[in-house]
Image (cartoon, rainbow, N blue to C red; front, side):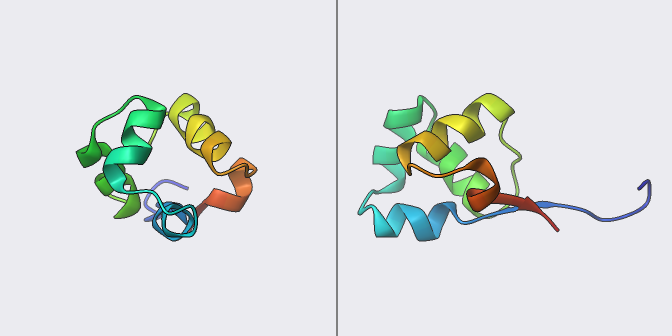
Length: 70
């Protein structure tokens, strides 16, 4: 896998809109800053497994339905 440009993609922005949450509201629910949520949505930041699971809990979703490797 070395040399491959893999990145973690996600549906956080889409799900946040569906649940009518702002970045700030989601950030508060999972204990991070709004900037962290913005970075996750842009796939420029890879959340810890713990944070990813907390985000999935808010959306009542399985981790593989929210995050995937591309």
